[in-house]
Image (cartoon, rainbow, N blue to C red; front, side, top):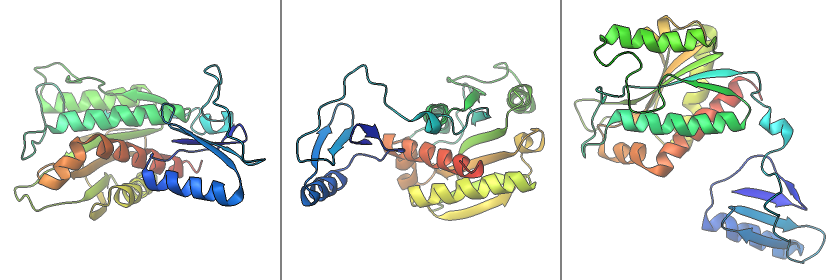
Length: 260
């Protein structure tokens, strides 16, 4: 949901919910502001000059974000790596959901959010397929993912996964890095953002020697968003809101990393 005051959009957005709309209406009433909610656009319009109801913006109006906000990540190339894909489903949840579907959905939502902030986004895959050939070895598949990032000369590499364990009681979020200062910073910021928004157990930003972290040339992290082997977190990972919140959290961490 966007908020427009006196014809100008405020930066940022918020998820639409009943309590927020009631709060905004009560504030407007107390201050004698005019207010209007356009459900189709998910837009709240406020007129601070008098109690009259603000007019709807025309369809020709360019919204959305200000030029400065759109340019926050201008010039940055970010490589997103949705884990697994194609013949490799990744881990399976108790109800049969597949890791490869969750990781791709989160990555595509994240791509959209990053591009709205001016970034150039390179995907190792943008559909349900392998990155290398279908009959490639595991190392060839991982190498192909690394090659996408290195050939694009990306500024960041972010691999998105779902965690799994033999016990269905394991829960939480982890961000892995290979130990260099910038990767640790990126992992810590995204980890904090994820656990705050998803309300998952904080398993920390941890060192790991994963292939995709060792051989990429830029700050790189691998995120285990939550445990697909846990029935509650499986629902989080497969839900529309859960996926969007995960993508929004990662985007927030990236913005904090670049201090924009």
